[in-house]
Image (cartoon, rainbow, N blue to C red; front, side, top):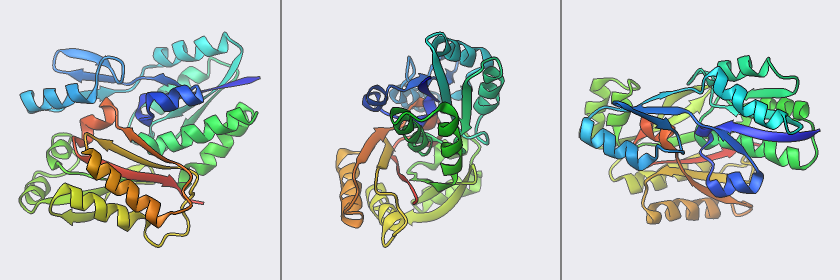
Length: 281
């Protein structure tokens, strides 16, 4: 049976990658005051920045409901596909629960809890797409990708603590101290949760370079097949500097994929956030 790979919009894969791997997306909902829209459909990161700057509050994001997933799964099941769907981590959203409830209504729908977000999730989505192209069954893909969840290494360095503060992800004191001292925290995804890592000081461009060095220097356990550089409204020069570090530190890297975070992820981290994401061997 043919296998269709689908994912929540939080995988932050570019339109080019979605087209290349024939991946279909189920968008999360983003609410900004009285208006509401779908992540990547009619709500973009630029709209998020405009709303936060004008209102001083963050948008609210919500998971696709069971009917949203059933609609997506029905479309592909009717065409004779088995389906493997990848969700943002269950610790961040009710997406996984809703997708599993919808999947119970179908014979060949398999749901993967990525235990991650952004291209930490996206790495698993592309792994599933590679396996589908190789002719693996949906059950085999789900099993292999679920085992690979623990191999994903996802982290980001963040410029503006006010987004984390407004979203309830750091205390007022930490936000105040970080802004006064010009600290740029690294946030790591570990065991399905966001945890604080090293803090960097000074200009964000310098922090990004130091963060990239810290994540990959001297490592022998990085899967060089593909490495993501995912960011929110960072300067091209800063992104290219990080890519240069990756090329220098991992000369055998096959593919460095640059993507920009979608509206859901942007809502929680703000502009000038950058992550280097990869899988361990």
